[in-house]
View (tube, rainbow, N blue to C red):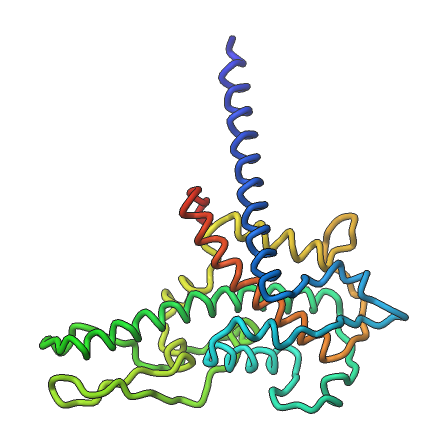
Length: 276
């Protein structure tokens, strides 16, 4: 009789695990559906894309993968691509198809970092556009309180892992008209806005909110880059590939992160996800 509570607890744990797995499956299906809407198939296991010792991913689908992003977000994505793989935004076709070597382990890390970057950009851009709408509403309603809406000022927050957050520069601002005090209201562009994040806000936007999202990233990256047996990415294998293929992987990863944010938001509204 003493063992009955133990068995009941184990059964409850198994049911909870099964429920979490089902939620993760639903989230993954939502992500796949988002990719299908732009007619992009996820890159299969990397070993299936290697021909004659060279990794080639075709078709590139660059336009489709870029089409889901706003212009300002796309600018930051191009800077990220330039940072992580060294491909300039205005490079020629010849440069894109030039070959390079990269370790499978490093490529896996770049892919995961780009997923997190896509997730971060989705969160930060939504926050940015919300504040921009509030600023417009503030102007239209002619609110008399001068400090009723505060915007973070751009300040230099040094990021050691610039591969994840990309490079932010070219400070600009856009005019939102004039307030009731006659002073011009301005809102930073997205890059400046992100640079204005304090460490707490930066972490809040960049951190995956749920354990289910963390599990999805781990499972997806291991399925793509793993060895098929242990699922580990830890290998010194060097892969010969083109910059075009690297760009395709990074763009896919960023889109995956953006879609993951949407899937997580939807799933959390139906089933309370586990906080990460």
